[in-house]
Each structure stands twice: as structure tokens, then as C-alpha cells.
Length: 184
Image 1 (cartoon, helix red, strand yellow):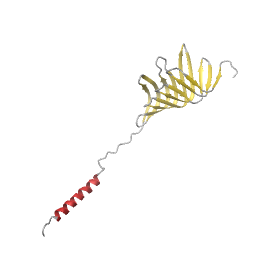
Image 2 (cartoon, rainbow, N blue to C red):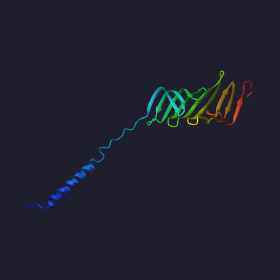
Image 3 (tube, rainbow, N blue to C red):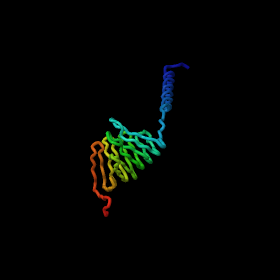
Image 4 (cartoon, rainbow, N blue to C red):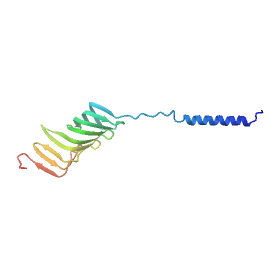
């Protein structure tokens, strides 16, 4: 039996094919599969929003669920919230079912919500409604549902309301008013 150049060539081809087959079989086994992060649930605490020029808002909550990437928080009950205004007292807020976008610093409130504004000299103005949106970047509060405004004993019901906390401007929808002692 004589060895020719064909025998080592055939062995080399088989070795090469075996090596390729082994590498194909092993391919992908070194890839680490990332675990999916679950949402976090926190009890009794405080969450804050910030603008470039300082604080935007703060919320004291009973329960909060954070999204897996921590960009959204869903709050079951806000015991005491504060919308911070530069040079003025904070607007106090209480509400249920609040969603916070931590990237844009926006608040979305569903369900009953009330805002209380201190006007000074013992006088307060209260806004109550079924839902609201606070845009943190522009400091605009939007009440898209019928809202009741109470100020110095007078009550005004408006179809909707938008308040710009930077300028103090307010845009009211259709108005229905009652003052103390009126027949209606």
C-alpha cells in the first residue's frame, strides 16, 4: 500500500469539515440572553420632578409602580402633591391614578383630582375635576373635563380650564357661575 498525495488531502478535507461542523454547532452558545427586568413596586414615598431652572413638582404617594426602564411611574394615590411655582407658593394637589413621565416631567391624572392655590391673606382657590394634565416643561395645567372653581365662597363651573403658571394666564371654557345668596 503506497501513500499518495490524495490520502493526506482527503484527511485534511475531513478534518476541515469536522472543524466547520463543530464551530457551526457551537455558534450562538456563547451569547448571553438578557433577563427581562420587571416593573418595580414601591410603597409610601415621594417622587420629584425637576426642570433645568429648579424643582417642577413633588408627589407623596401611597403606592407607585415604576416601568421596567424607570421612565414612567403609575401612582395609585397621591396624598399630597405640590406643583412648584417660582416666587409664589406651591399649588397643592390630591388625586388618584396619576401617571408620571419622568423624561418629560409631565403628570397625567385620571379620576378625582383637586388643586388648591394659596392666594395670600388667608384666601385660597380650589379647582376640582375628574382628570388633568400638567406639562412640566411649559408649566401649564390643563383640566380637560368639567371643573369646579371655588374662591371666596363663590363657585364657578367651567367646561375646561388651562392655567399657565409662568404668566398666570387662565383660559376658561363655557362658564356657569353661582355666588352665595343667589337663587341658582
